[in-house]
Length: 402
View (cartoon, rainbow, N blue to C red):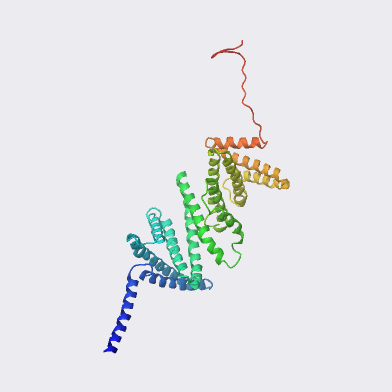
């Protein structure tokens, strides 16, 4: 009886543990059945990613196509598993008020993506994949399994990089449409937001896993950007940060953000900084904005327009050539730092003045500001507004001489 009693007790303990384990798996939580399924799908997608990489190094196009198709199908199933986890697990935890702050934030971001499905389907497609991958990347990081983390990073970078490029290319194409000024401003804002996201969250991982000096040339620009990631930025600093973002985009997204789109982004920032100058009442802040304008004009002309091959209007190309020749001549006086800075400033102001004169009514305040600057630099003379008339004035009546 004692032996039987012990045997029954042992069996009961075993089945209790097994039941508890199954119950935990079946309850829709982060460590439940959805977590197990995601883990299985993740391992499968990583295995097929390796096969896909190997196939790309071979010359058998038929085999390559078959493996790629299989890899994409498994990738889709993997994303579906993560999507199901969001709805089955995170949603229920938020609804029952048992979710963590991370889970609440994750669900909020999920609905921000979902709500654009009917109006901006392509944007939704890229953003949803990006969201799901980012969510599982965090889950993988939390496992503390170094081997899995390193293996996943390579797959993650490849996929997420393609999604960011697709998203930026989509916005670039939209800018070519006949949109209102307000609609274009919304797209510019989206471009800057996506660029900042990429450089803040993805580029550091790429720099970490890069085995060669692929990104060596952008380190300097990236370090500049890091200066704008701490604390609250004023409008001047925000424009300057976006100027750095465009410079980085020219190296990271040459095909996704064509030169013509980067040019439009620079023009947008030039408009913003001109407005900032004339709207600012504090003299010190105005001078800061003016210094930024000079820097921005140089970046626009030297880093972008100098690389422009195709010009839709030949006269604009000739105009730029004239500017470029004058700019290069300044090299002769570079040893005299003060004079070089002054002459460069005069050249930039005159160049920008030509552009805004084309819309004189809109930029009349900026034109006046530029003229005052040229006067202070000794490039223009101020003509006093004098009016002399002859005659005898008595009250409001004027008696003119014969």
